[in-house]
Length: 122
Length: 135
Image (cartoon, rainbow over all chains, first blue to last red; front, side, top):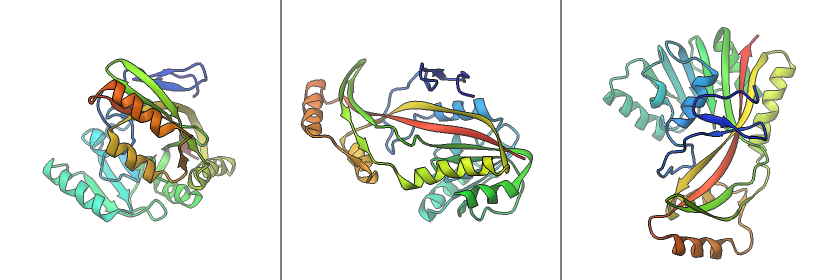
């Protein structure tokens, strides 16, 4: 895979890729700017109309970027407060196919998935 | 982490995939102050190996070696996280394996004073990604 160019990211001479168009703005939490991470993931895996399991979703920072395209999303995080916040936001956005669950990858909820995302989920 | 990958594997459909994004194991975060298009390098943070990240990378290798997954893609990427002073301090506090080189804070203060109030603190980070397909 090293050397492949993918949407929004460009290769560096060390065989790595770098965001092609960095966006202005502050990113508290130290994550990539909104959109950059998703472009990378979508260049690696199809999320549209797929059943997605996301591990370590936090407050849904990444989840809400792709949720509207997925067939279903189950997003896990051990932090109950963040899951509550994400659930309220999903309700407000009427994303009925998205479920935020307090939990970890060691015990994922029942269901079958096409894609599992482990993003900064140590 | 091997347990986590194995538990998730059981929930994946045939030919289902895992996209795993984790911090690069050995990178040293580079800190700069940016004002408009001008960027002033302040210094590189010393980052000790994080045992959790090491475990995550080893787990990836283990499930591939065991034949539980097949490697579809692997690579790395760089991005810059942008901070104000408060969020930068939170980042330092959250990353207990980071330590600042001698003179770093004085250089940071001087760079911010020179760049002006609208400047941001940028931390260049690296991460690794891998795409694993269920066998």
